[in-house]
Image (cartoon, rainbow, N blue to C red; front, side):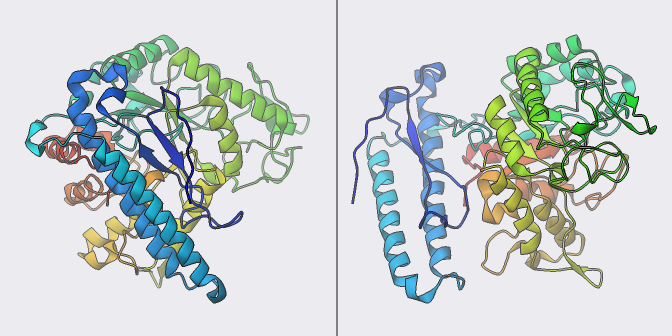
Length: 481
């Protein structure tokens, strides 16, 4: 079967999803596939004619990955024991037809492109996609820099210090930078927010933040704001002496606090996630709360110039609320921190970490695929594999990567260290001396890799830059296989 439809001139490709029926998605729920419709004449004007060669090579690599992923998904679904036997032949027939149609679309796309010799691409050239996939998930070619550590607030002028390094960070090949929480906070690091509209923090003033974002944009980088939506510190006590009354522009009362927060006597509904015990947990089921937070995120986008979000402690509230916030604020890229413990037996890490990555994937599903998530599963498995030379851990029972990146690569943000695990906190520090092996893995594999600030500005700098160059020269993206 087939269908014809018309694309407006500004469209350079189309998205599609694969479903078996109204309730069953093909392998990765809510995942999306992208088939570019790119010819020489359809390259967006802002890239210019001189960039057409690298764009075509990039698109070829990207489309190859998509088609391979479709075929792997088809194969994986056909062999799933959970599928009912009586439906198997029908399912396989449907999937074969899907595969044939996808391959045909790919063939049509390839036939419209002039073949370009590989040596045309210079060693320093960064391949770029022709279009953005969708809001919240970027292009697939992002390389993320975490632009701070746990101690960055101490100088009181972090924004200005980072501004001086904007060109340097961009020149290393990073395309996106994650900045620290910008709001007034009870804790200097920013993760105990108080007045959300007060952006004079320990990192610098609101004007300095704007200067920093402008400088980062000028060198071609996208900027993620670190937003804490799960909890908020109160300004005032209630009649019982409990801190649950808020001030500032968002002057909520205790109805904004979940009812089952054991420490803060909220009058809202029960929590839709896990409680964060150090501050009042916000009730996102309240319409006035969601309205205010949507407006705040929109204000941050407009006033500061953020391009997207890093979402703190998303275990604390339902991912469906995140979907609402992202649809309202329209970020270029968004990633959630769904931190959870891996599976262990008698102190030994289990080989099978499917239950761990499933919880992260479930959260991504709840957001309707509008956000990615940090691949904590891959971090933990890499940690154990390199520390003990147990390299067999790097493949799951089906021969795929054992983390979120093996199930939903387009939504997996891989990393080996951050401000919590490393820096001066050291809650789960990556094995010493093994950092570059970890980066060699995440920078040459699918997913969106994130590199920690402390590692960039250290003796690892040149090696990290070389790996980024390898990733770019070979057109590796979040779906590569």
